[in-house]
Image (cartoon, rainbow, N blue to C red; front, side, top):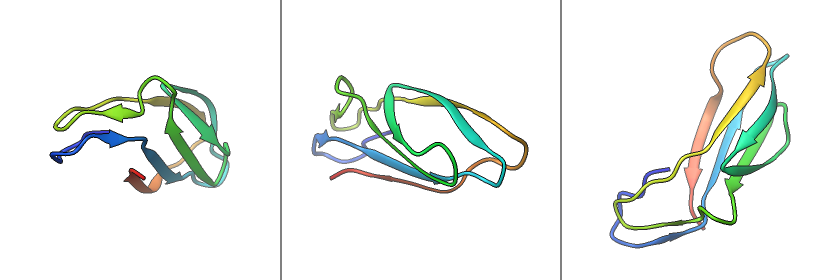
Length: 77
């Protein structure tokens, strides 16, 4: 998550779609809802505030074959 604005972000959400047969097995620096299909990852308690022109990272491991996740979007409340 990169904040290219002049305002501080207070929370962030990433949404993505996994292909058939793919599943998230672990997430770090975030909290996920769902492990297959449409998945949402929200900030952890310690990295939700992102300063102007700042950034934070999260990651995940997944199982299954196929292309990279699609329909990836990043939003902040």
